[in-house]
Length: 154
Length: 298
Image 1: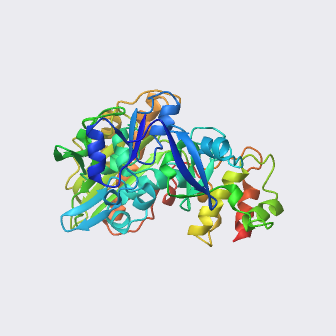
Image 2: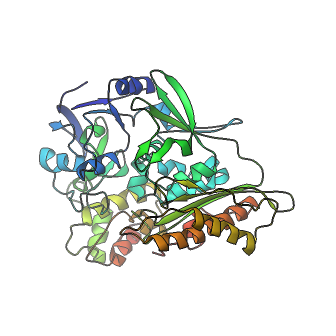
Image 3: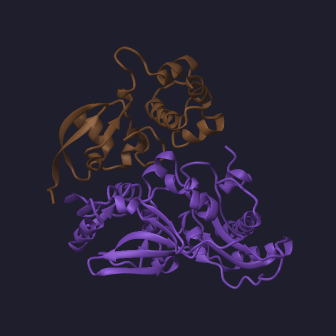
């Protein structure tokens, strides 16, 4: 058994970060405060809004409600991991072009859910896109342009 | 605090014998702790990497669903979608893709929420819960595990290791429907699960109905006297009246007790109707809520 603050290596976007985290610290807080990647947002902090969505071993996870220590040995992908070198991910390019970003706070979470959806279902219908993004809230856009953006990226 | 990753059931039950509490997806435990509903246990054992808990075995003796099987797997597994459809209907309605990806059937059962979606299907499908500790293994009918909201009959040292379902019989169909205000991240306003077995004349040979969110625990509806009769408006009304009469709903921010008492009858009737259609061989895609247009449309 280990003690209250645990040294752990987290692999985020292909980079290993050695950090020390309290056992009860969630992944969101660890990413933002210990790893220093602030693209992942804290919205409701209640597993409702999806602003904190990241991928763990390729699957979407609400990082506000997942213990950081549970990701030991697993691959975490955040919004910072989408663009390669200077080139935006096709979903990022698409959401820009479709006008799916207004205040931008939900965007990282939307992108990660969309990324997981397309990895599992490369040709989703509009209804499947809606269901794939159904754990993500947006208070600005009315969703239509976000869904357009995902459809366009297919 | 201590945190241990268990790689086997043996690791987990030994940690629990020393006072650790299990965490699988954390979707109830971590959220609950943050709200102050229940502080995070002092000793945690992570059970989400135990391979033996993540297995579904379909044998002539029945279906064994490992406690660590996620809702995402439940809603797409052939033995469940085809032959225990109510459980797939329910799993497909839980939370969002992210919730279904981390949330497990064992966690859902042991969290013992009276509004849980998978509970009514497990009751009508006659599920047994397998509980294991360093002292041994026992099985308990699922309805006997829940003793109150958030409370189970399991000892603190007992790990839920599997749900055991009997073999599916011929001409058996099941369905789960719920009243909801939105399509995702929703908790049932009320929900109903049903199992129907039809005889050769298409009369009801067996019927079971259980209800979500209308009592302190999932409620099995008793004394529905319709065996030997056909599925029609008259028999469906018998189901609806029994469900409404036996419900013990509360009023809260989601709905009033009167509204719940009325709508649970409607949901029970729709669950039985869908289960009967499936029993007759008709395919209704999972989840029934979407296929027949119950609940929120978008």
